[in-house]
Amino acid sequence: MNLESPKVTLDKSAEETFNFLSDVKNFETLMPENISKFEVLDDDKFLFALKGMPEIVLKKKEEIPHSKIVLGAAGGKLDFSLIGHITEVEANKSEVQLTFSGEFNAMMAMMIKGPINKFIETLVTNMKTAI
Image 1 (cartoon, one colour):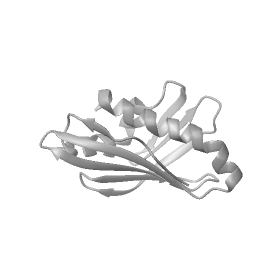
Image 2: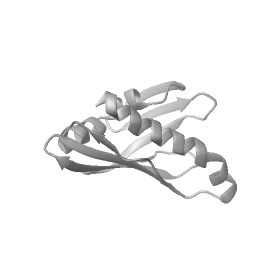
Image 3: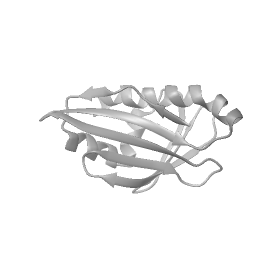
Image 4: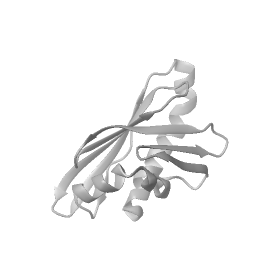
């Protein structure tokens, strides 16, 4: 299952955007309002939970300076990645798009597609004010 957020344009350079997203504690400012828990576990790992959903631990798996950050599930039953694609538009403008990728059975995919789509849209929308 692959989902893509809309692209958002930020008034920050690709480097500034990348540096913000590289610091996992900054993801707390991007979370939806219905977050019930957020905890930084390590320099590259954090846990979060949305109301009515299980806790999810994300770990930074890969970084390509100023263009890509890959967060992946750290443990748990589901294996998935959340990838931030950063593109420099101008000197102080960058574009960000999040993609979600995971292997799920058809039933699970049907149940989680809507909430995950909404979740990644919220993350990129909140980047406009957080970064």
